[in-house]
Length: 287
Length: 319
Image 1: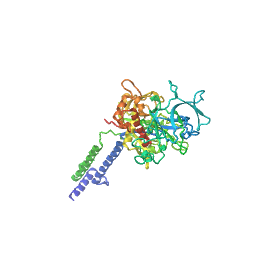
Image 2 (image 1 turned 90 degrees about the horizontal axis):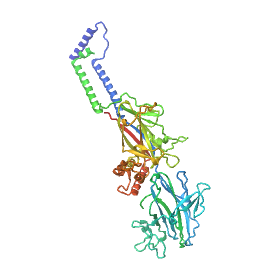
Image 3 (image 1 turned 60 degrees about the vertical axis):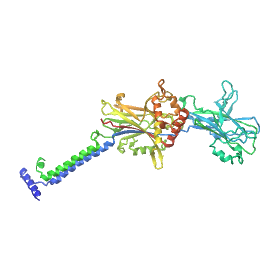
Image 4 (image 1 turned 135 degrees about the horizontal axis):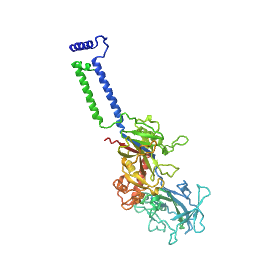
């Protein structure tokens, strides 16, 4: 109470001494004025802080460059002439075997297939086939020609995806011997010796061949007891990987390699069974 | 005012003093928290668009970063308005939500000032004239550094981060799998320099391998003096390549005697970061097996990432 009275006295005294003639204007109380000034300063600081923080996060300056990725499809098998750059592909379903007389021994039939791709270093060709009719197979490197060769052996391929176009394929020959160059390979699971009838037969492909064990083995001494043993697939693979390109600098370019699959007949026919062959190419370097 | 202060009662003087003390303490605390030693572009506006499709990424106290939007391959749409590169609009939206605007003129929606644009890819994918990124692809990344004071030397450390994105069940997601993130670093290489014309891939020779960091030294660059929006800028052009196969890398690594496509330091990088380069066969010495490992790495990247974004970020050196 004493302070308040003192305050009022002081104010009145000041007012009187400074401007005795003027009317006293209404003024905010001192406390209110102090708080007003304080608030103004706080607002000022708040503005400073908010702008400061806003800029603080922008000390990081960054650009982001975006692009879509495509997983490369790099290795394919086709039935005939294929050209990736011009989007020409002959689907493998055009490779079909017809007119093979399995009963005539010593005959052979040639079929063309193509391995094409891009962005791989090398590949191996694998064959898997049943042995009901005892066909044997060879693969030769083939060279493509657009014009019918005037001499020598060749096979022709009529395109299905391009009208009125035929390509011709000759088997590559060794420069020195003149012999056809076969792609070297080896069997994974050929039973040696042949079975009691002298027929080529597949055996299990090693200790981990669960498929063979489950399908063809029936107890310790009863291999092939109940299931057609010639239905067991024989696996063959090229011994050396085939390089996609000779030069490392060409690796970014697509390639198309042509091969002739030669099917030999042995004259051993099973009238009740057909044979199945699978051709595959793999880019893994190790079998 | 002077009378006011002089004639304050003791109680009010105490009140004022304590308020001022609180204020000063508050300022000190704020300063301690945010670091007053950071120079702040307090009044600078962050947004500016120049003519010719240039956009200022951020205006900083010492330099600005500008990009050009002259390459827009991945933003292409068909006549009906569909994206030719499926999902790119979703990717742009995702980048926008991360603060990177990909709109060149309407900067009012972008308060952060960070910008996204197309990575330049010079290699056509084999199918349908498209330019997907894949093993064997190569291109470059360009941005401009504009010093506020051209007389002053600049030394900026840029961090290069490669992130993969894919479309998950709930939308565009960033790849979090560490193996995939590492493989991206070991398959997509950035270089400071490349000799040889863009379309003569067989003549390309790379130098200056960047392992996630690019140091920009303005004394090694020349300011652009031609009139135009780029005047007063330094141009930065970084080259990138995703080597097709490891056999290709191995056959074309430089050594002490021969300069080949890839610099010798790349061999060092590969040997010290084998898990970045090969998905398996890490301990092998056989080039064929390592090539399989590299191909598996490519496949892992392709299986997990549908898009990639290269972020180049400068952390301001405020000394």
